[in-house]
Amino acid sequence: MLLKIIIVAHHSEEISKLCGELNKHDFQCAVTSIDDVYEKIGEENAGLLLIEFTGAPEIITLCRSVRKEKEFPVIALTPLEKMDSLDDLIDDFVVKPYNSKELITRIKRLVKKETEVSTEPIRTAGITIDPDKYEVYVNGKLVSLTFKEYELLKFLASHPGRVFTRDALLNQVWSQDYFGGDRTVDVHIRRLRSKIEDPTHVYIETVRNIGYRFVKN
Figure (spheres, rainbow, N blue to C red):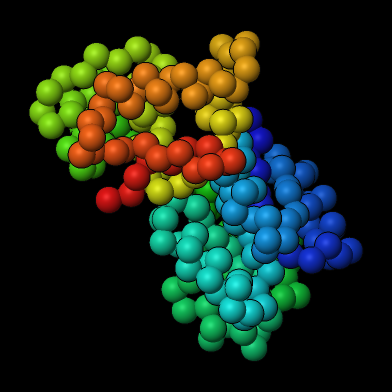
């Protein structure tokens, strides 16, 4: 499965060349504008954000927003004179004019760090998910879930606050077992909510026209 790198930049010969280099190293690139980046982040396989850093207020807001979620690594392509503006906004940076080999090395390091698998239980707001036993407890009570319901919950809870499109969830949870329409996600979300939520506890939010996210507490 190719990991998608979302590149926030103006289309240029430099960016086109970079995409070509990344494609050679088994990455998939999607160049987008600041206006469309939030939707792109929710797409399937999206795993890293590469930003052409200008210091503009909207770029700084984007960096802070993504870093707040703590689930999406960010690398900046920055002019030397803008380095002081980065502070803790990003995970790593490369100074322009950048060396593509150095950039790819930094991307691989971050991706490896982010994809390390943990079998530690996931605990959040009254829910405990035990990956070793495939069990889910809500306020200490064991909840009976189907395998797909369990996988869907575990995936969302592993990325609290991050929005995923239906297609992304289909790719991550159903993968090649999937043969129906994307409404199967809605059906499983509805069933899952009926088992883990009550009027005072909402764990999974619907993000209109995009998809779903696990509430970050």
